[in-house]
Structures are given as C-alpha cells and as structure tokens.
Image (tube, rainbow, N blue to C red; front, side):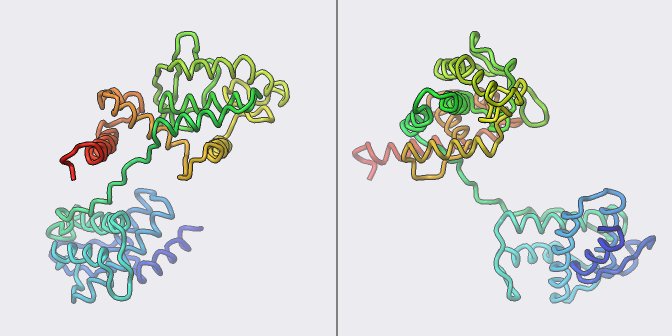
Length: 337
C-alpha cells in the first residue's frame, strides 16, 4: 500500500479527517476535531513510522471518538474536557449507539489512541491542556495461569514415553525439560547440543531479547535427556541425513523440531494420559512455577528461573497458590463451612 492510498484508507476509517499538512495551529485558535486528529495521524505515519495495521486501528478508534464528541456537541479540540474522555471510556465499556460493549483490553486499546491524540496536541501547543492525562485505562480481568496437578504431570510424562523408540525418547526428554526447568517452548526447541550439560545438570536457555540464563536440571530431566542424546538423537540424525545440525530436538526427518510439532506431540501425550482439559507447552511452564511456589520457593528465585524481567510478572503465580490454599482449607477444616 502506497503512502497516498494508505492515507485515503485512514481518512475513510477515521471519518474523512482532513489532511492539514503543514498547518500551524495555536492554543488560541479553534481546532476542528478532524483537523486535530489528522495532525496526529500524519505525525505518527510520517515522523514516527508507525506500522500500517496500528494506523488503521487508530483510525477506527478516532472515528468512533469523533462521532462521540459530535453527539455531545463538541466541535473544537480545545473544548474537550476530562469528563468527555471519561464518558467515552464508559461508553466503550457499556456499549451504546448500537455498539456492543468492549472488553477491558479492547477499551484500553481505544483509550490509547485518544490519550495519544490529546498528549500530542497539548505538546504541540494546539490545546491549553491534556484532558486525557488522568483518565486511566480499565484493568483487564486478571486470568490466573493454568496449571495441572503433579499427579496429572506424572501421567502426562508417562504417556509421552511409551516404548523405547527415538521419538518416544525425544518426547519424554522434551516434556521433562519443559516441566523440570520452566522453559518456554521456543527456548526448548532452540537448544543446541552444546547448551545441555547432563553431567553437571544444567541447561543454557536463550530467552526473549536474546537474554541467556543457565538453569539447573533435576534428576528426571537429566536422565531423560541423557537417554535421548545417547540412544534417540543419533538415530534421528542418521535417518534424516543430519539436516538438524546441532539442534537437540529433531523431527523424524532429522531437522530441528518446530514449535508446532512440539505442541502436537504434547497434545498426543495429553490424550493418551486422559487429560480432558487442553494442555499446551505453556501449561507445563505454569505448572513448574505454581508447584515451585507451593513447595516454598521464593518468588524472586522463580522469577530468575522463568526469565521474567519483572517480579510483578511472576507474582501472578502467587495468586494461584493462595487459591489452592483456600480450596484445601475449605475441604479440610471442620469450621471452614
């Protein structure tokens, strides 16, 4: 899409906002809604190089905002108040004018466009204030990470190691690694042979942003990896012609195992184990963190093991353990009910 066709598309989505290229507006002059919005969109596209899809999304959000302000009789950006922005957010959440209510996440995304617009206009000296500065986005519902019980983990791991074939050895080693280290699936399938030291019991993972961390491996993971590296991987390498290079986990053609294939093998093991709920590679990461905290691990230790940049990300798992404690209390204490 060219610059001009993209501009026309955004114009249409944002309600035909006029292109005011080069226009200088001061805080003492009226500023039409479409003019202010177009100034911000042009700034994002030309000076910030914002992605096309983001621009289209902002265009849709601003079109709805423009219609909302027009219904309230507001035609000048300088006249928009904090109450207007707050009322717009409430309409997003409650619905209105034939529109369905938005989730907290979707409403927050729309508010990002509105707040960005007002922040830009105020910084450029086009409006006397920033009416969106103190309007906080709604907090999304905090979804607790999904974890399975230790008994279900045992069943899953047993189901992944049926037989003594190279594939079953690989599957058991992969799942033992995921649950034993809390690794992301991308980190696991990205492992090279030199990243794993079964003798010392450690593995080097490359996480988000290229950050590396070295994690300990438990006895079960060490044994499963050792068995696969000695008896399973060499055969997969021979059968596939060695196309996987230094990759630890190989597919049946000898290439590096993909995330999609890893997900599929986990699903197959879950079905054999009789696990009714959906189980994903991330489920094992959640289970690792939850079981560590339930066992008494410090949240900052779990943060380091998971490779979280902030402890706040890890603390959501503490909610899982508190919920578990409530369930145990309700089931076992004679005065709980």
